[in-house]
Image 1 (spheres, rainbow, N blue to C red):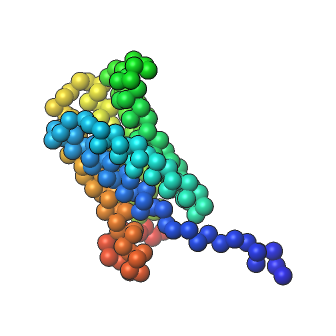
Image 2: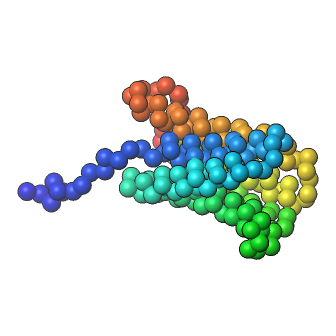
Image 3: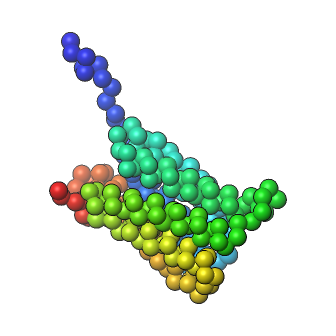
Length: 195
């Protein structure tokens, strides 16, 4: 009997819809705030910790079983992005550390923008839907960094609308992957890249 006959097969679910929806829904809600519709509140913090944060980390761990290095890196990284963002906002309120000033926040957002730009190049081999998600996310991070660096408060409202679009594109990609798999055919086109 050959050795590979005993090899375990990965029959776990596709984690990409969970990761994309965790990212997308949390991004939409934060950016509705950025667009000026409501104040920063516990709903955003809770989404950032549990759905944007923990759910994406779980999706990333599952991607490693799928041998998907891109999904593993992206979901775990952005899951921890949400946890660090909540930490940056909550820890000063608890009196643990000084609040992050606008220059430090611009650096934080800028390095995430650079990271996202690098991942954006990887999407050229994956799908058009992910190109939109990562392209608009790159723009979002750089707009947020620029707004903090310059103190341009009027830019924040525009950035909020751009962020809503970015999050909505991730929701579309997540729901598309889910429904396409459930129905066994293309319900929402994701634009696979052919090489």
